Image 1: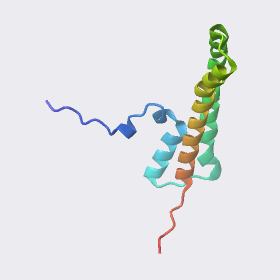
Image 2: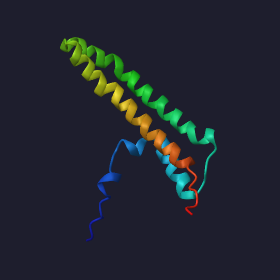
Image 3: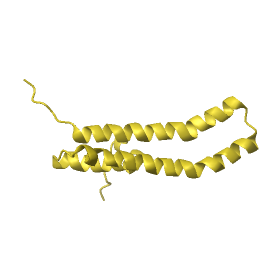
Length: 110
C-alpha cells in the first residue's frame, strides 16, 4: 500500500489556510482574473472584521486572566502584544499581500 506524499512544510500552515483573501486571491490568480479595486480589497476588510471579532471575544477573558495573575505592567504589555496585537497584524499583512497579488499586472520584460 502506497503512503500519500505529504505537502511541503510551507503549505501545511494552519492559520494562513483560513484567511479569506488568500483563498479568493489564489483562485483568481489560477483563473487569470484581475479583480477591480473593490473586488480585490473587500476580502481584506472581511478578514479584518473576522479577526477583530475573534479578538474581541478573547479580550475580557484575557483581561480577567491578567488581573488574576496580578502581572506587572511589562507582563501585561507582553501578554497583550502576543495575544492581541501580533495576531491582528499578521492577518492584516498576509491579507494585504494576497490582495495586492491578485491585482498585480505583470508588465512584459523588454
